[in-house]
Length: 471
Ligand SMILES: [Zn+2]
Image 1 (cartoon, rainbow, N blue to C red):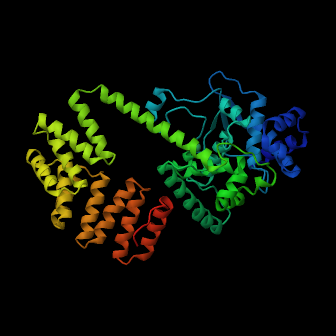
Image 2 (cartoon, rainbow, N blue to C red):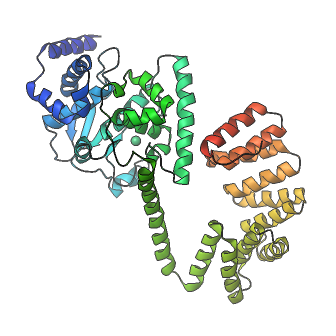
Image 3 (cartoon, rainbow, N blue to C red):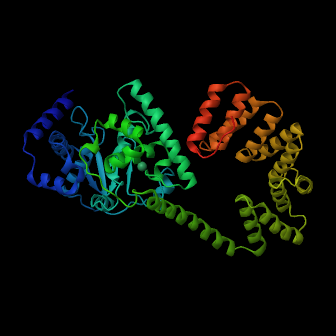
């Protein structure tokens, strides 16, 4: 009580003082939004900034010094975000803002001690109920307007707001059950659409990073809501509406439209996104090629064969397994995987021959059991299929493809409730697999659980709108 009273008295005193002229100039120069805000909202920013400057701990990383200019810029951008709330909001539960000179990276000792720490280069981090950490280098680049749609201050402060009502789950505190219901309905659909597009490598307005999880989706949406409000409104009107309701702001009303080659015209932005996707996958290919080059010839051949199989090229895989088995006919892993390749091509007799040869060497071989079960399933011996696939899952319970196969076997055996159980297990591992969702929908339908089936189908269609799902 006393503390609150003291704090409020101190705040009143701070607010009674005139807003420093150099701060006003800084905000005008540095914080793009501030320049365009309506006077009432600018006034609100001028109330929030001095309190944040006085009350927060502004810590530099290492011996880096946070200058007043940096603090005012960061506080100013955060204050714009809060300028629509009914009362002045000072981010009360946030005590410390840590500023790094450049990008942030944890040392191997730090990540070793705490495996939850992210790896790689970071532009910012927000801890739940902890400090917000920002890279000044990143902040500066973004404020020049060279990377429209990106704003690490908005991003990290959105995480902070998200965490106010519990764990950061992509939903900030909302005023009513009704707004929560609307929030979930809209953001869930938008999130699944983004996950589907990101998986297919399609161009989207929202950065694919938002598909990482719901918390990142909220943080990324917040960046676009403030930075590219016109584009967000045009392409995601419902998402824009729930964000507008939460922030009590409509940035379209004041911010002029900036056209960015990255986000205008689907072709160009598509190229950009595809370029990024390609760059990522190429990095994978190069790493793999290097690894293969370093292997003994037999191991390299085997690795390439497995890769063909994984990428849906069973004929190429068989060709390489043939060579390997010529050298060592009792190579059980090659036998088992060649059996799987034959299953893909529906060459069942050869698949059975290979899987039985592998099982004679090792009766517990997961892939051999799997292939043997697939053959039984395709030949209509469903209980035998269930037995084989169950034995495979005993050895490798996390293999989703085997669980999916056993679910098909249960369906064929007239046991949809067992199929639902297997598909639910698989979805726990891969929650955004549209095919698993549609398969479970089919199992629900067989159980007359129509509303469960519809829920799965809706999610599947959001993830993969192009595919026509069987009813
Ligand atoms: Zn984030």
